[in-house]
Length: 234
Image (tube, rainbow, N blue to C red):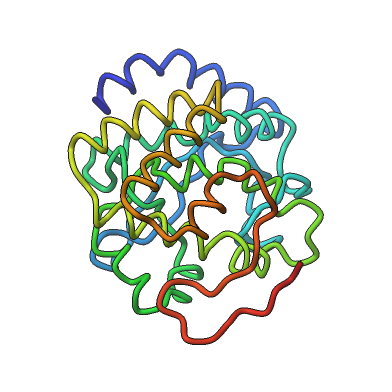
């Protein structure tokens, strides 16, 4: 599936790569280390959506108003075009189509013992959390400290969704999440409704179901397995 996807997407990726290169005549690709299954690292490929050496000019988390995002990069990020390149990592065996999103070392170093389980499976291009928080940049928008806000407001719910996926993982579920990922690109509300149905069927935490619906403000919460309560930043 990854090979077919790369072949079909190649003309489009080529056009986008040329547009990115024309902005500053720098490489249109962004190769970055990510945490691999088992706790090692691999080099993840993306189309570049930010200025060169952006990681040296700011934090790990990126808000919608981050000045490091290039003009073409805003389009790339809005429609997740940069993630298509990760089909190459799937083809290589570094990633799966569905699985917890690969994390940078700085984020993985903060994982609680419960969250460490996410490093025992192959990371994926998409999962439930990717759909629920496809607007992550907007959530972090205008935040004075995007990394702190991410760890208080987004990470706790992302991790819970990822751990729930690991517990329920099946070939049928993966196929369903692939379809929901495609649906979310054009009709996010429908995809969120289907995820809510899955969570209710699995008997998930009612608070997690509420947050995953994304119809009310996110609340700060401790990550899975944490003993201390994270102070709310609302």
